[in-house]
Image 1 (cartoon, rainbow, N blue to C red):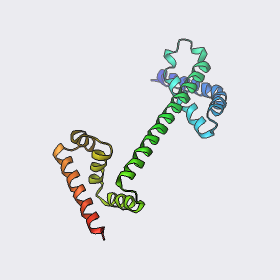
Image 2: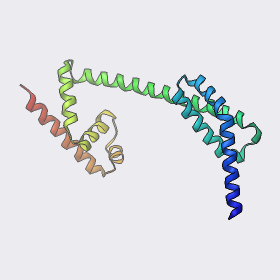
Image 3: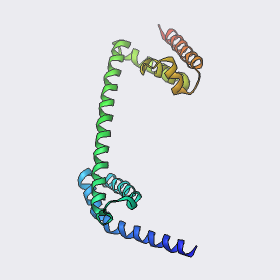
Length: 173
């Protein structure tokens, strides 16, 4: 037992020593890549955890700083790729919403009324309608996302659509 504690203490000391030695230059690199101190700190911590997790498997353990640098660059590149994908997705969604808005009528009041009516629905009915018609999922896919049977998803959509129709009829002059 005493040997395990001593090994644990020496491993912790080694880990601390690695962090103290390599974190400041890694932080500078990450900051130069990101331009954001908080993002740079997150990047360094994530990279450090990943490299330390693979420390026993590194081909050249003495090249820890090189592995850490490469991991920081790779994580940053992955983050940029995710941001690019998110922006493309948001742009597609914005375009789809503007087309849907045009389809809903050219009057902004009509779109706003429809949006308010949708928001007034119970959350599961609203989710079912959004999944079924906005996301264009099948009944089966909608049921899977909602975690219910196909019949239940179909009923949620039907009740939600009926509630929307009633609301619109009530609000008509």
